[in-house]
Image (cartoon, rainbow, N blue to C red):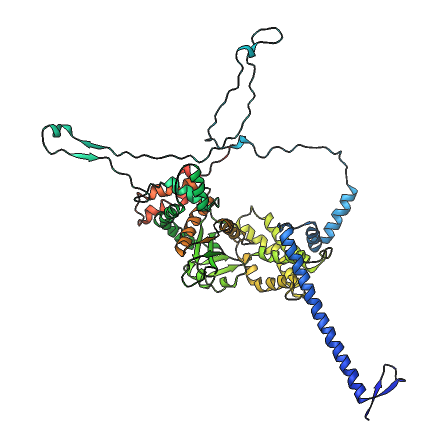
Length: 541
């Protein structure tokens, strides 16, 4: 039998075994190695699952705010100015002055003293008469020496008004007596907002605002009106708002779209929408509502929604045809293949959110000093700098960013390149997102008008997402398109400090008598040309 000599670590030790025993030992070693690799792989899987579980619990039960907590601020301070932090801490220890504790009552934030000037005041006098005025001490009559004013708020239900139009007819009685041809003249008939309907601009505007601002579906409005004694079906209300959207609001939408493409800085976002009767698609499939809006560099804000059956990159390409400038977006790759004249600006809120999730996915007590916390601190530093530059001009902000923000960005990229993490872990996802989006995340340095995040678009998409929870879906693509137009006019009105109900009422009332094919007539209907009566009521100061 063949023998094998195995030499140990000491030159004096030597064991001779058979080839079969050697191969057996070798196999056991390979098996043990395989088991160790498998255990290591399973441990990594367990770690990822536990991380996902902690993050899921936090999202479900934890605070939804993404503001930096105390640990993040501490990491933030030590990461960028450790010496100064330590010096301040010592100074505080030396100069502490104890002030006796006292209580201060917080003033009431909500009072009736700040109501708009045009809110009517109904005065109710509470006086004493007759025997109640007799002085219990001497029996003389008491006189009024002062008044205590107590204000209360009264909210009335929807006011229903039937507008009865009476068109009079006139004839010449002289001609009638002389048996000549008698002229008959009728008072001119006012155009109906929807021919053959008893709808008014006020009624349609109310339904639109209730549905698209207050999130009240048509079936709830139908029930509310029924309780008030009005029988108005949801089908009729749907026909009203879609017809008004098509005839009166769409021309204004198209004019706003033309104006939007002329701007140099825009924001974009998208969210899902279910359309039940989409040709060629099952009812459960996802459609999309796209959002495009102006940035903070204008006092004539425009917010436009566009319905599309999918999320293909061709949709923003087609909508933005003719636009040249900067476009704020999130990390969706569909925006990254737009024409060369469009510069994509990434969103640091999304980058920060990744690191925030990575911190929240860590076991309790492991966040302090972690790579996730360091990444979060870099992001917070950038936002902190931006907060200090809010009141600067674009030119001044551009200069400050190059002087102060760019060094932070350079340090962060160097830091990120020196870190490693499992690709599927929360930290790994944060680092990968940061590196992949880096060219877009740093684009905001190119112009002082640009913003650090795409929060402006997210704030504008949120009203639609909230209302979607109430009406759940659109029935047809036509309904989805009409909803996009109505949402656009309402949100644009709000951005321009207009009351949506007053603006929509004024728009439809003025548009029914206007030539809607005349560009100048449509121009007069834009939000910034609305009369002062359409503006939001301003409270008393």
